[in-house]
Image (cartoon, rainbow, N blue to C red; front, side, top):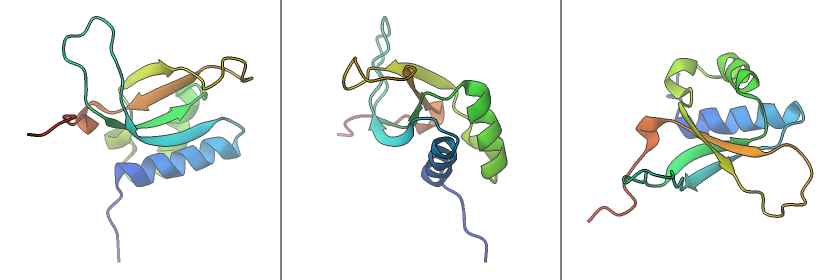
Length: 106
């Protein structure tokens, strides 16, 4: 019996694989990017936050997802660390445009 793969499943598996390779990686289900100079700010999005390079993300995604292309992030933004003194490379949040949803649906 085949089950449908959700983007949360894909990003969760991807984060685990990236951590296994020594990168910081976690899924942020309600990441709220603030895009400078944009009048339309996206609502909360499902994002993967990591210090891994884009090439590594793409390779790991291609090896784990049933449909990698459908889950390939096409937007990104640097994420501030909790403490600026935390060691390691900068973190970046990656998400898909079609994951955007309004913050308030009234």
